[in-house]
Image (tube, rainbow, N blue to C red; front, side, top):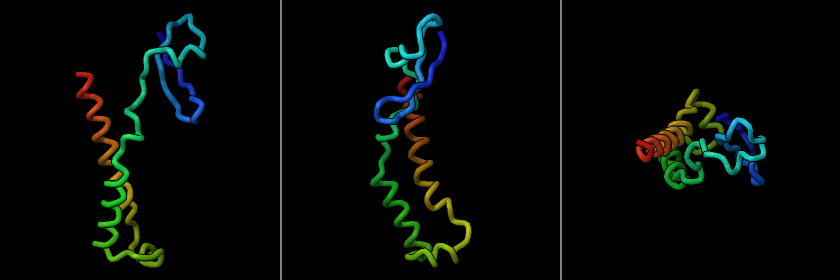
Amino acid sequence: MREVVYEDKDGWKHRALVRDGDPDDAAPGGIPRDPPDMRMLDFEGIARDINNRLIDLGITSWMDWQRAGNINNVIASPLKRRVVMLLRGQEEHHE
């Protein structure tokens, strides 16, 4: 078996296992090796967490953001937390 990465018609990349002798275009029918579907992320919750953190920090404009310094975790943290939850949930289903 070997892994093949391919892109579907909507632009989403996938990884699948195919038999050694199968051509790459057999990948859509192979054994999926994808991460969980990122469309399952709670985007409403992510937006709420970012909004609430901006409010807590008093950031209501681009100027406020610039003055606040390095606060990229305001955006990264809510997103990361939910991606990790999806990945952990996938592992629990495979145990």
